[in-house]
Image 1 (cartoon, helix red, strand yellow):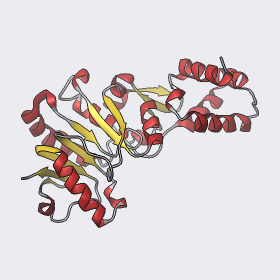
Image 2 (cartoon, helix red, strand yellow; image 1 turned 90 degrees about the vertical axis):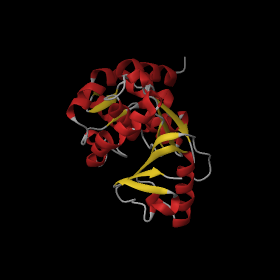
Image 3 (cartoon, helix red, strand yellow; image 1 turned 90 degrees about the horizontal axis):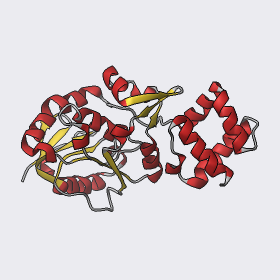
Image 4 (cartoon, helix red, strand yellow; image 1 turned 45 degrees about the vertical axis):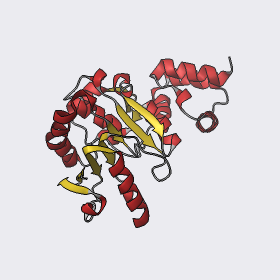
Length: 258
C-alpha cells in the first residue's frame, strides 16, 4: 500500500475523517506542504508525530476545518421557519416533505435543516437534498468538520446532541450526515428538482444580475409544489414578488401562487 493511502487510512482511524472525500491531488499537495513546514518528509513519520503531539494534531485538523459559513445563520429566521413555516408544511405534506438546500456550500445549511426537522420527525425519516456548483465545497460538507466559530449560533443542546469534539473543532455525527443527499448543480444551467415543499436559496442571489434573478425566481417557482415555500437570505427580499407568482408569507419567506 502506498504511503499516502496508508496515511489516509490511519487518519480515518485516528480522528474519523475520511480524506478520500477530498480531491486527491489537491489534498495530497496541501498535506505535503503542511508536513514539510513542520520538518517532516515522510507520511509515516508525520502520522506517528500526529498520534503523540496534540498541538501538531490540532494544527492538522484546523487545516481541514471549514470556516465558510455557519449553522443557523440569522437565528431569528430559523425560529420563524421552526415555529411558523414548517408546522404548516408538515400538516400538508406529512412524512413526504421534500426539502432542498439549493446552494449548500460546505454543509452548514442542510445539516441545520436536519437538526431542525428532527424536532418533527425521527432522524431516519428525514431526507434533505443539498446542491452546490462547487464540488470542493460539497466534498468538505461530506466530511462534516467545523470550527467552533461556525457553531456560534447553534443552540447548545444541538451542539451537544449532534456533534463530537475533534481536537479544537467539531465533527457532525454520521447519523446527521447520512440524512443529506449531496449533488452538484448549477442553478442557472441545470434543471431543478420537482415538487419541492421548501427550497432554500440564501445569500446567493446577491451575486447575480437582475436578469439572472428573474430566471432563478421562475425556476424556483416551477420547482415548488402547490403552496411550496422559498426561503431567501437576509439581504435578498424579493421586490414585488407577485411578478414571479410568489406571495410574502413572512419576511424572507415566499409561497408559490398560481
